[in-house]
Picture 1 (tube, helix red, strand yellow):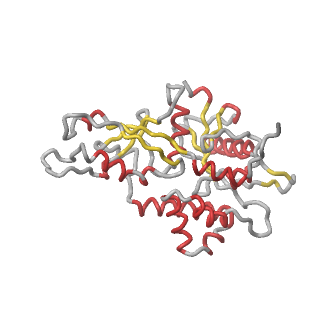
Picture 2: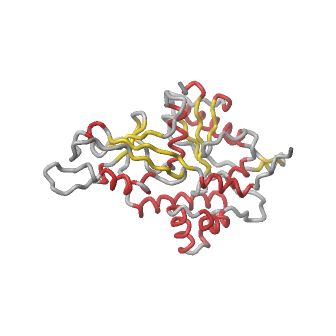
Picture 3: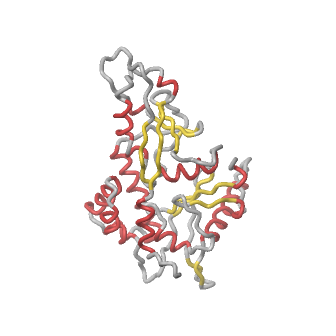
Length: 306
């Protein structure tokens, strides 16, 4: 019996449609301040992997506003969004990382359970960790962050030529399609950003970020094609180059903790999937990039998983 072949384009649809079940629980401290006799029930949401937490904070605040008052003497029942933050396994979650990236990095690295779903996140409405997080911005700020990242990706791939030639309505269509979960509307514009320029059959550089627990993300210049040896470079090549370069930088800066640069010591996760290390990185960039056109790669050291 033959196995049906999947069109590469369908992979982008499958990744777009992937969801994470999340269980939001109000922190113990904030639960003591609710304006009802009963404690708030957990809030369950199915979230797309590629959006950001600020895109859904209004929904969460509306839910908890039925229980919580920012000031116990205030007759109104509202929540100060500036004080809202999320936590997983005692780690405050960054708003500017895609939700799926946070899940892949932290559940694979920190969870003591073999089952991570639904992903349990603690909601805090007070005691904002100023030294660890930036406060949740409004939706216009997260749109600006997304567009800035997208422009950076196009600068790496095409010297910014394609995004620069687009009209403002194209930029808005990308963002609105992302918010409204409209795959076709998004890819009608995004396919232009996957084109080749300058008579090349590949991108100038691959937009990627590598995430390792307790470290800033790693980002280097990496071309997907080795002109000198006339060969396509793979995910393994990208990882080995990036980790080796990072180790050199750390040693020159006299860092106390040096990154492990043995690729085989890591689980490599993109969109919740562990792709083969011999996958051409050009193909990954075209079909496995997030909507911001970056490959977000989580590296989880095998011994970190308990």
